[in-house]
Amino acid sequence: MRPASSSWWGSSSVRRSSLRRHRRESAASRVPATGGRRGRCGPVRVAIIGAGVAGLSSAKVLKQFGFDVTVFDRAPDVGGVWSVTRRYPGVTTQNNKGTYAFSDYPMPRDYPEWPTGEQVQRYLDGYAECFGLRPHLRLGTEVTSATQDEDSGTWSVRTCEVDTGRVAEQQYDRLVIANGIFCEPFVPPYPGVTEYEVAGGRLCAASDFHHLEDAAGKDVLVVGYGKSACDVAEALSEVTSSMTVVAREVTWKMPRKLGNTLNYKYILLTRLSEGMFEHIEQCGFGRFLTGPGRFLRNGLLSAVQAITQRQLLLDRVGLVPEGSFERIVRHAVSLATEQFYEKVTDGTIRVRRGTTIASLHEKDGKPVAELSDGSVVAADIIVCATGFRQRVPFLTDGLQTRLTDVDGNFELYRQILPLDVPNLYFVGYGSSLFSPLSAEAAALWSADHMLGGTQLPPLADRRDFVRTRLDWMIERSEGKPARGTNIIPFSLRQIDEVLDEIDANVGPLTRLTQWFLPARPASYQRSTRKLIRRHGITAESVPRSDSSPSSEAAAHCAEHADKRR
Image 1 (cartoon, rainbow, N blue to C red):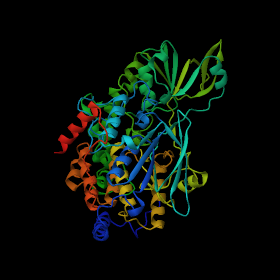
Image 2: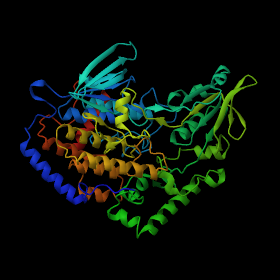
Image 3: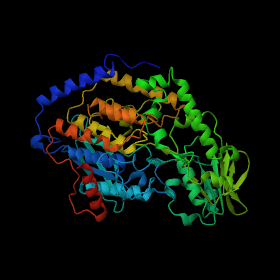
Image 4: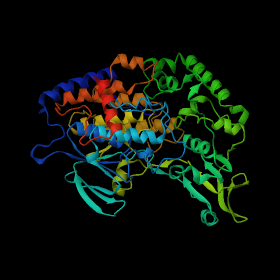
């Protein structure tokens, strides 16, 4: 593993001191109150691709800083993965509502601790209304191409309205890609799919299966063992004739409440939990936990593993994963679906461990799946929860080559900035346990950079930093870095690095509290306020609506305003 160049990075205290000095010098020479404006030429125009968590956060932040934003999404509603077009039966958040929220817009008090997909979509819709984003949304509009003028650096964005086919093309000064890391579901190309479908079988991704009644009385196979797979299997098993989960590998899962008592947020959503896993630049108490105090860390992880194994009945159903519990953070942390293991125990759900689908075909006039162990299983419906392909098909092949390494992994500084493509930003390109907060931090970093406030290290150092981090990511994820976006379990560490670089992080007391208590998104409201003051922005930074909000959004805005007073 190559160390990052010492010419720029040095110690964190030296970096912060240098950044503060740079801020003072920059503030002294900056013309105040210009925000995202470019004088006589009008406001800086920013196109944002994606209206999910990352896209909405980007739009809200950039709008606060005076940029003229337009948000495109092919879905008819906001929400991204929470859109009505992508919700499968049984989908809920992994986070509790207190941690899956923006800093200045809490989840409604009457929501359950783990909101449903529909509730999250309503929350995001309320966020868009509360912050006056509706006039900036172009929903039902797909971006078909985004090309950059090599001389001016501006972007030509070509779009197509999904319903009408109407094509348009407009020019923008900056482009923000916020289509997320779960943008296109992957369905394996099984042999025999045509014969299978002719026999009446249905093969689809989990995000394309929307109606519980479609599974009534059917023999259903769910492929995968992640949260989506277990969620949809448990939900559909209420109405199916049979439910079989085909799992190539079973992985560790965390109960929502360990021992039916301790909420998992106190275990996985604190700095202490991050400190138990070895970071490439380990520091502070984390260095102790992974060094001299490793016995404490190992003891805690072993205790969590033993309780989880007993609570989820893993020995009884033969689903104890290989390896220790710390492998839960290899790719993505997954919560155990409520009632899933109980249904495996009573036979409602069958799990075919260590198998895959070898082929699909017809048998006696009915659709079936042949598994890798030679067995044949009735399968009227096959739901694939087999991950996603991260794509940016609207960019030219040449641009995509400049954005990735030879293996197709995105090379982004801070998971945001390409190394050599100007005026382009990525928001939401990190698999964080605090997705809204991570997106908000990236949006603030982007706004600060667009306004000339971010002091970057030299390109050679940035390139070395990105390559070193990516090599480490590949190693710790056992070769599955999610195209360079896998930052779990270091979600708070990533937020720290992003906000530290723009000198807008929370204070030491807040960070100390986060070692033992789950991070509160509201603690990060000061980050936006601090940047607004630094850049001399005079526009209101409190939530408002450019149109009459719905009663739900109005009530939520009022509740939000009360919290700020």
